[in-house]
Structures are given as structure tokens and as C-alpha cells.
Length: 348
Length: 101
Image (tube, rainbow over all chains, first blue to last red; front, side, top):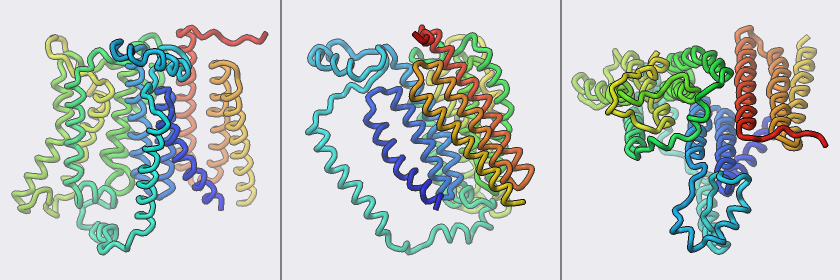
């Protein structure tokens, strides 16, 4: 009874929060709402008995994505649109800005949406939502029960946890491509050359002994938790993604508190760390072709060892990727001094 | 014995929930950022503390009791630091503490 009530509150709060995230004009407020939304989504996954996804959602969806968004909003503070575009609609826009803003200089969503645009959007969106809802409710029984198949073949997968077995054995091709996408994301962000847009970091980096104390306290704990999650992934919820998210969050904390400077001068260590997960995964995936003749088809005797090796390197790369996305600026090549310190916290 | 434990933990969790409620009301009603932080950290520290105490009575094993306690300690550390950071940022940003007139 009580849990039903709890689920009902959750189910009502989720669409309400999602709506508020999308309609809030103050971008900072929207980000805070988004983080709250992510936490409730994580809670929902936990209620649905999917602790793996709950862990990943809490760490990546709410935590790190929230940090990335806050970084972006911080970078937008005080910026304005180019004056040439403002001249056409200046008075109206200025009035709207006044109405939306709580304090001047904060970034707001300025796009005008007249009522007929909203109405025209509402109708197809409602139709799509209803159609999707109907499709989910009226799902036919699947011809092949994939969950049953996965748990039937768990023994052959080399690990004792179903989700890890699916991610790194049965559907490892998907995971390989996902890691490739993460790598591409860093390359894309670096190529935007956001070196000067580093919101919030400068303001936080000096003279905060309390923050430094907390980060020093949390660093060993987070390294242990990350290592534990990686190791536990073989037989219970956890794995490379969750471990990587925790260690990536540690990287963000270290950079944000100013205790560790991101490697801006010579980033070859960082570059190797970012690529090593994908490289090792692909390397092992193709190397096993010699033994079994198929891509990513591990030989049965060494499955467990191979999966653990892959997960170890994946964790390093995922952690560095998430931290690098937060830092945004690529390492600079032209200067000579060496700062390798960032990897220390994350490769252990 | 079991039911005594059950009632005790229910009472503790309810006390914790009361602190969360009071903290939320304070967050919504207090006049400035410093007062709101004060209300919020009460909920985080004391409210969660009571909830944790209540849950520890139900933990069943020493290990899970210790884990729950650890969560509270981590929240204490991060909550205090976050409050300190927000207050420092507000003070540096020129927000003056509210005074009763």
C-alpha cells in the first residue's frame, strides 16, 4: 500500500518535473530541476529493480550531466546575443528578459514562442505520446524471450551478473560502439576550441580550505568505491560504467577545487588514457578472431579474464572522458612544462 | 522485541521526516540565502541523522548498519561543505545578511 503510494507520487512527479525543466526560462533553475529529475529517474529505476541503471543514472544522468550543464550555464553568464539581431526585436525581447530574469546577467531562454506555435506543437506531441503509451500497453508477447535466453546462458558468459554478461559478452558490439561514441564526443568538444569558456572554475579555484578538506577526504573513498564497483560488476550490480562515472566525478571534483590542474600543456598521457579503453576493447575483440573466427566471440576458457581486462581499461577511459568533457579545453601543445597530475587520481 | 524495535525505528524516521518538513518550510519562507541555508542544513544533518538511526535499527547486520551510518557521515561532510560554498559565494557576490527591522 505504502509502496504503491510512493510509486504514484514518483510517477506524477516525473512528468511534472520534465515539463518544468523544459518550460523554465531561467537556465540555471532549469539545470537544478534537471538534476532533481535525474535523481527521481534513478529512484524509479531502483523501484523497478534495475539497480545497474539506477547507479548509472544517478552518477551520470544526475551528477555528471548536471555538472556539465552548470558549467555551460556558468560559461554563458554575462553573454548576450549579437547586437545586430537584437535590433529587430529589441524592445519586446528586453521586456521579456526583464520578466524572466531574477538577477541581471543570468542566462535565460529568450526564444519567443507565440501561443499558436505552442498549440501547433502540442497536438502532434500529444498524439505521439498517446501512440507510444498505447504501443507499450498493447505489446504482444515477444517471440523470443531475450531475458530468459540471457539468464539461461549466463554460465557461458564468464561472469555471474546478467547485466555485465549482456553488456560485455552477448551484446558487446553495442558496448564497443558506445565507447567509440564517448571518444568521439571528446574529440568533438575539443575541436570546438572552448579554451576560454571555462565557466565557474576560476571563481572556485582559490582560497577555499573547506572544499579542499572535503576533496582530500573524498578522494581515497571515491577511488575505493570506483574499484569496488568495477570488481563487483562481475557478480552483482556495478561495472565499468558505474566505476568510470564515480572516478570521473572525482576528476571533476579535483579540477573544480583547484587541487589538480587539468593537463593543459602536454596532454599525451591524457590522450592515451582517453583512447585506451576503445583500443583495448577493439584489440581484444579482433584478437579473439584468431581463436574463434568471430569478432568479439571470446574463447570460452578465458572469457572472465578478457572481460575483466576490458572493463579495467574501459573504466580508465570512461573516467577520463567524463572529466575531460567537464574541463572542455583540449590540452595545449605549444608549451613545454609537464603536468601529468590528473591521471594519478583516476588510473588506480 | 521485534515490534518494539519496529515502533522505535518508525518514531525515529518520523522525527527525521519532521526535520525535513521544517527544513523545506524554512527554505521556502526564510528571508535570505543565509537563513535558508541554515534551515536546509538542519534537514540534511539532523533529519537524515534520525532517518539513519531509524534504519540502522532495521539493518539486520552490523555491516549494513555501518554502511547506512557511512552514508550519513558522507552527507554530513558534503552538506556542510556545500552550505559553506554557497554562503561564501553569496557573501563574495555582495549579498548582505538580512536584518530584522
